[in-house]
Every structure is written in C-alpha cells, then in structure tokens.
Length: 349
Image (cartoon, rainbow, N blue to C red; front, side, top):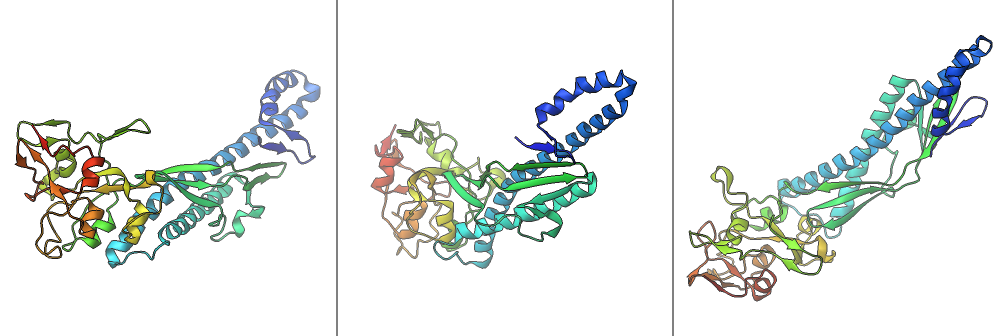
C-alpha cells in the first residue's frame, strides 16, 4: 500500500486519510483549532489528487501494454507481407517485444508529463524525474511475452518498478505491481499464407468457433451433421470462413492444432514448431495455388503446413460423393489430420 508523507515527515496510509474526515468536522466546531483543521483538510484533499495521479499512471501502463502489443503484432505481420520477407529464425518475438517497450515508453512519458502539467505534481519512475526521460522508462528486461493459447498473448510488465509522486508537502511512493494485458491476434492477416501461396492468397486469423475441449479430450465437431445440400457441417463452415461476406474468396477459420505453427513461427516461415503445443494453430488452404509445384497432383493435404510441404492426402466423402472445398477443388487430408480432426471415417451419410 502506498504511503503519503507531509513535509514534516508524518506518514499517512489511505485508510488513515479517511479517518481524518470526522476529525475535520469536530475541529471546525471549535474556533481555537480551526487553522489546524484547515491544514488537515488541505492535506487530505491534496492526497486525494496525488492518489488519483498514481491510479492514472497504473491505468496508463496497463492500457499501453495491451495497445502496444496489438500494434506490434500487426506491424510485424505487415512488415513480412509488405516486404515479402520473413523474420530470421528466432527473432520475431524479440522484435515484437522491443516495439512494445518503445510504445509503452512513449505513452507513459507523454501521459505522466501531462499529469504533471495538470496537477502540479512531480513524477519519478525508477527514481528519475519523468521530465528527464526521452524514451527509456522501461527496458526489454522489464517486459515479456507469454502465450497461453494460439490466438493471443499476454504482455507482462514486471512488478517492483518504483514510482514516486511529489508535491510541496507530500510524497507518495509505491512500486508498480505486475501488469498483464491480453493481446488478441484475431483479425491480423497471416503472412505465412500470403508469402507461401503462389498467387498471394490472403487469410485472416479468426478462430474456428465450434472447437471444444475439456483439457484432455479435443472435439473439433467438424462432422456434426450432413446438411440438406449434402455438405458436412461444420467442416464446410470452417472452410468457408465467416459465411463468405461480400462474396470474397473464402478465408477459412483457424483451429487449435498441436502439430501446427504458432503466430511467431508463421512470421519466421517455419515448417515445424518448437513452441508449446497449446500455442499452435493451423488453417486450410482453399483451391490449389501450388498445383504446378505439386506436378499437377491434386491429392495433397489441405492443412496449411502440410500443403506447403507437399504432404499427400486423400479425400473424404459424404453419401459416397467426394467433398470439395468452396472453390470446387477436392478436399484432402493426411491420415494424421483425419485422425486429429475426427474425419477418419472417410464416408458420411
């Protein structure tokens, strides 16, 4: 808990400040100590402004972490797509972390300097006046990226960084608690698909909504039912994406895949992943953009990573009819993915 000190060194906790209120009321009733009451009231109200400044700094750090994480992930994806060049192996996470730190610094410095102008307080971070900073309130050793699922990551700022707010008769000192802000990757274009498809097909990361898991058993629900058009639901829904808005080329959903690639793998064009299995995802390739590279063989697994590696696949059927994707190409999977996705039956009725 933060401590407020007056110019004579007396210390007050926020609880003690609240206890001043009845003292002020009583003191005003006795003229002989009215001056002392006025001093105490001023200290209490000044402390309230100081505590508000502290809260604003914490909120700024928390929001800046989330905004900076999303912006850094988006810019990393655009950098690969616009330059048609992947990050060197093992560098994408460090690049995103560095950009997050730069953005947090800019936001916190600007906000803190504005708070100083509005309140008359002096703000110190790491015991350095905020007015002396240009771009280094936080460093890359203060910020880490932690990924707990394929579709986002947390930006974590270590706890214990000292912050001090000063005015003429008060000093409020505290240490920032650990800050953790979740950053969604949904809606970001996948550079892995863009670069590896010959005609620059575009796909945007959105998670397949019908996946279910109890922590040990995964149910993809891709073979939920056969609809009246003879299509296998929810496989068709996953292939077609978000109901194919505006009749654009379908953009399939992404699904949790222990054999797949993390977002950072995709920035680096990896063919396999060293990241934890729970951080990996895959999507399907629609059409056959690398048909010539596969020597005209259409029977290639349509899971993105396997498709780019040229791993063979076989079709599945509904009522003895081969399943085709929304662009009219045979939909094929390897035995590995037929088993994983619950489609090993091969023929549905």
